[in-house]
Length: 325
Image 1 (cartoon, rainbow, N blue to C red):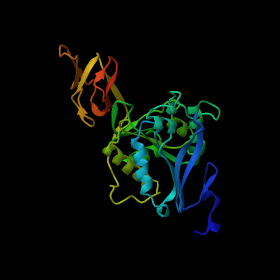
Image 2: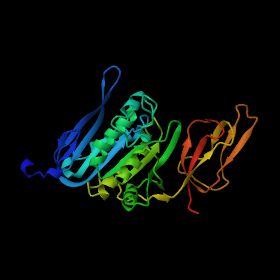
Image 3: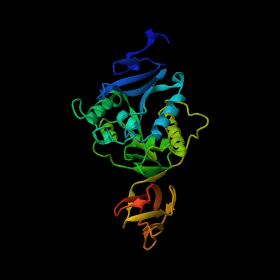
Image 4: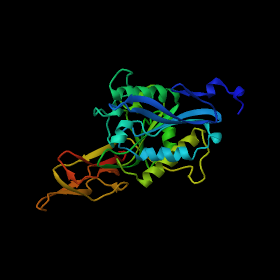
C-alpha cells in the first residue's frame, strides 16, 4: 500500500499506536502492576481494513470467569483477512485480566467491572480499567458486541439482550441471529449503558456458563459476529454461515424462584417451551420425605437455569422468556 495515499482518518490510533489500513496489530495496553510489580496489560488486537467503514469492537471476559467469548473472539480474529475487511475490528478477548487469571468474576477488590463504567482515571482499580476501556476502545468505535455467559452455577441459552427500540441496535440484533432476542434496559454502571450514552449501538450476547466452553454457544457467537459484520458491510459472510437465522423476539423475561429449600430436580431444558401451570421441577429433601412441586407462572421459553441442585428459598432456578400477552 502506498503510504502517501493514506488519509489521516483511515488510521486508527489506540494507546498512542497508529494502525494503518490493511494492517493487523497486537497491542498490550498497560493497566496496573501487581504487588509483585508484574505489569498487567489489556490485550487488544486491531485489524484495520484496506477500506474505510464501521469500527466494531468485540469484548469478552468483562467478568473474568466468562470464557466462551474469549474463544469466540479467537475464532473470529483467526478467520479475518485484513485485505478483505472494510472498516476496523477492535478485539479485546480478556477485559478483566485480573479476574481471568484468578478464574473469578470480580477484580481483586471484589468489585464488579460491569458495574464500574464509565469509570475514572483516579478511581478504584475497576474504575480505572473501565475508564481505560472507554478511552481507548469505545471512543474509537461505531458499534460494539459484548460477550458474556451466565454467572457461576447457571447456564444460558444463546441470546442477545439489547435496546430494541433503537433502530440501528435492533437491526444489528436481528442480523446476529441468536435464537432469542430480548429487549433489555441497561444496568447502571454497565459497559453497555456507558457506550449507549455515547450513541454507540451495543449488543450483549449471553450464552453458556462460567468457566466452561460450550460448543453451541461458541458457534452461535462466531456466526453472529460475522453476520453483524456482513450487515455493517465490513466483511463478506463466509460460505459456511447462513445469511439469515431467524430469532424469537421477546419484550420481557422472568426468573422463577425456589418457594422452598432443598434439592432441585429440573424437568425441562434450555430452549424448551413451557406453559403456564406446567410442572418444571421438584424440590425435595435428602430423605425423600417432602416434595415441593414447582410450576411455571407464565408461558414462554426456557433461556436460563441453575446448574446447582442445592437451592435455598428465593434462589433463581429457571429463567423464562415470556410470550407476549
